[in-house]
Length: 572
Image 1 (cartoon, rainbow, N blue to C red):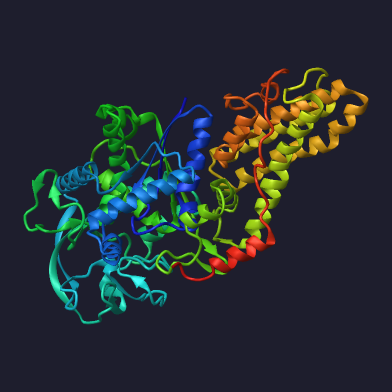
Image 2 (cartoon, helix red, strand yellow; image 1 turned 45 degrees about the horizontal axis):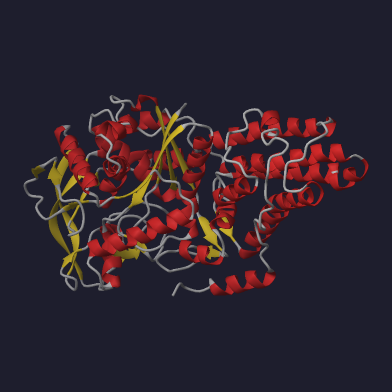
């Protein structure tokens, strides 16, 4: 039994996420976690809300709430939506937790001991209108690299270039919009990433199985221009982890907090301690996942994220872990995704463009969205959500192929044999040919899932569904029954066993529908089909079942047009 640690990029607390956010991290991470559990492996799947920094403060101010109260409210909302989308987290934590606060301060102290922190007196933008310094995301302006007019002071979301607020052309306050800005001196701590350039370079070179998207972004940051730069890890903000060296005060850093991008990835580790603390487990239970001196040396650690998060996960967070000099588990595989665009434009949380997770669940159950998003995951390039494509995929893949198969075979059996797996007859050449084909396809499906090739996995799963339909069409038990009822019984028996078989294989993609199929076929047997022939004999003659309700309703043209119009503009 393998041990697999999975983390999904932690979503910002500032509002409900859109479908592009979902497919870029949490959803494929959940797919992989469910698959690995289905294969009998031990999985620790962690995620959390990212609660510090500018977005939280701005969103709280807009909502008219104290930031701590706003974050607590939004955490509950995000946790609920994630649960309804079927996210199977072992723990969904909070970066504002006491565990993350202490661990962040611990890492800062260790980095300082290692000589990897330096104090810098720097010039920073101060807003007279707001009466405060405006670091990173509090400042917006034109990107000097690509000309994007709404670039933030830490990074341009258009070209992903790392920026400092003073780099922006025509900067303005993100709080008030004021351009009455001036440069003042302030003191901050910097992580000496440049001192770790060669170590990080060698570590990334060792990751030969990483996606090209991941390594190319990391290498660009390491080698372009002046190479990897030291990075400020503190900010002049009220909300965040107070700057300390472990549990000691840090002279000259009073009233400052750690930069959100320093403490947010540390929450992956702290989240495991939150899990242990919340369930009354000793520290050894979470440390066996994260400390290589306490059992994590046999753990495979996989991260999922959108491409905009890659620089921090390939460079800044590893610099923190490596620089500490402590035996923490490093990531083994980093699966990054491109962007999902929306109907001719971009999804945008800030502009409210596109379908958001809560809205999606108001109009259709989670599995409709899970299937479309995963089968169209933006892996090798950006992909686009269109309502026409969504309608076509739901109607053809889910309703016509999978749903239709389950409906036909259960209803036919009920009409001729009753709601029981029929006995009689033996599998013949056609049945054995199907078993051979499905064996090859299941092995291919497993290979794609192990490789985290999400689209290829979906294509193979659909082909497995199609094979059952083609068998049913060719065997035509409704015709066989007239001449040879026993042979028809064998065909139906195979068809009913295919429902359980499909439920098990499909569970990572469409867990709610998988559960409905298992319930209808009246079994708790979710064992993986290592031996396909045996799996297709799992339900014996005489086993009771019920005919399920329609698994997937087709999307009508009227519905598609209504939703297209409803979500065309900005969100309320």
